[in-house]
Length: 435
Image 1 (tube, helix red, strand yellow):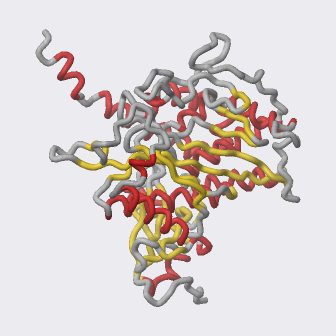
Image 2 (spheres, one colour):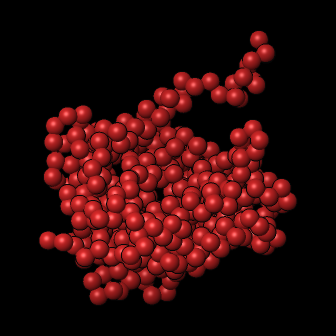
Image 3 (cartoon, one colour):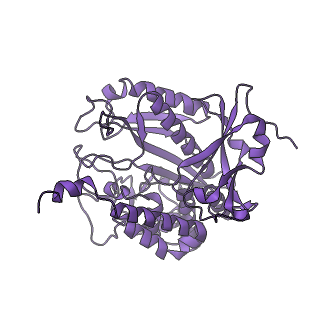
């Protein structure tokens, strides 16, 4: 049966997109005349060529198929000849348990069995940089050098940044996203775009639309979009904060107790998040560079925003969980996380907390950077420590899915090994002529 294709006559190709284990967009172009093939059996890919699938090089499961979720089809605003569609992973004719979007869909279904829906607002922070003559990424605007640049309008309104951000807002609006605000963040060249919350799967899809558009539009303006968590040692890094709330089948906000604080169920869910925080950190901060952000060290702005201790507080941005307006903001994730896997992990931590009626520790209502506590546990301080915590948390990994967690841990351990085997510039500077 022919599927009615949702595209105008000007579209030439389907951009069939999925994500690998790192959450990086992958895919291929398929002539629009083969739209039905992208629906079923899907766009075909060599499974072992995709990072983190663990698929064999021969046999029926060697082929990875990305089957289009037709409801996600949108004309790419920056390239209207492309119909961008987000795909689910299949292998051997079955749902592929190494596909992170399928992993999130399973988590959403598990939460739905309890009668709940997770709604998520995602706040991407990022840098707009340029390459200098040596190929090094540097701040675009040489006048963007305030010690405390948050909300700086002069830089925000200067070309080429304004043109880039304005085109990005237009593209996201054409995608059907509701852009709420855009601002200059706390480091030179750093910005944030906020768009309205929606259910977990749609929010994850929206983030992928945002990243795809941001990379392409920045390049059109001679810029480089960077989601690197900590590109500059003396400046704040970039987070990818999740604003989390749950509604029941009637649409009632079950986290909100009516006066802006958390209900009993909300506290249970928060306790689950904090209980699994060490393991979650591996998924939410999955690169070596992530742990240069997750430190209480100072910056030129005099401010740091990344959490270090495990805890929560009322409107307390020095904690990983900030409770405000009857919802919680989870501040551990950074832009290098696989958003599908990350939200699946959040859901399973919530389910564990709700099912076991866990109780969170007392709220921290002081500045944790100024008044640190030896009684509070710390988040892992390295990717090695975080991966060890994830590997040891069988409750969480079994709930998420053993195969995808095993592959994630293996890929990340290989990444650490590659880093350790590389001689870095700092080593040459420190040791090259010293001895």
